[in-house]
Length: 275
Ligand SMILES: Nc1ncnc2c1ncn2[C@@H]1O[C@H](COP(=O)(O)OP(=O)(O)OP(=O)(O)O)[C@@H](O)[C@H]1O
Ligand SMILES: [Mg+2]
Image (cartoon, rainbow, N blue to C red):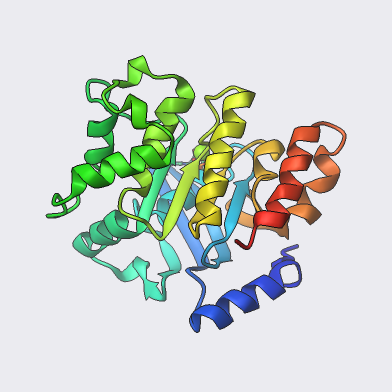
């Protein structure tokens, strides 16, 4: 059963008290139905979830459990069939297309498993050009793109094209692009799915640094070792929340025997989590 209240109550109360406001993300009875031909697919079936500012959350669950569908909703790429999604207290499910695009541009940063970089553009151009064009926000964009690339450790690769970069460097470019507009939420859907284990650790350390600087981070992953870098693990099954626990309660027992690296990372996450 969902046990988030007991697991996370102190932190949730703190963040509410600090902000004097509600959680950053509040999802209630969220449902998403797809129709393909005569088939009806219930991708989300009444999902409830709250995420506070500056949390670092892993979303897990088997293939088809609704993780990417949930990320698309949280990222305002798509609208739920029913239910409510309050972002910063504003109901996203009622917004029109223009408003939705504006929220997406200003509040959301996306990172994908396959990087989604434009192959003929340099790292700098990839960061300058948002996936969805922000209205009128060109002034100072180059300087911000350079700063973002520097932030992810790629100051010396700005004129390289994706095929001249390693997988980890490509994902760093994608992260630079995602943080360009200083989004409220950084959403990453299996960001280390195409990376080897050493590069995975590098990319996760980068997410953790961003989190330590105040960024809210939500990462979809199939791997406990990746989730161990987060503070909280939400597991989905059949479009609903199966469990929602602090990482120490969810993962500790599962990875101790398998991966000393993940366990040491996990204790680091506890120490640095509230920074
Ligand atoms: N655009 C779509 N049209 C129709 N059905 C879809 C669409 N997107 C997802 N689905 C269906 O919704 C369900 C949830 O899919 P989703 O992509 O959210 O799963 P997931 O948890 O991300 O899986 P994976 O781990 O394989 O990425 C699946 O049954 C999928 O086939
Ligand atoms: Mg998916």
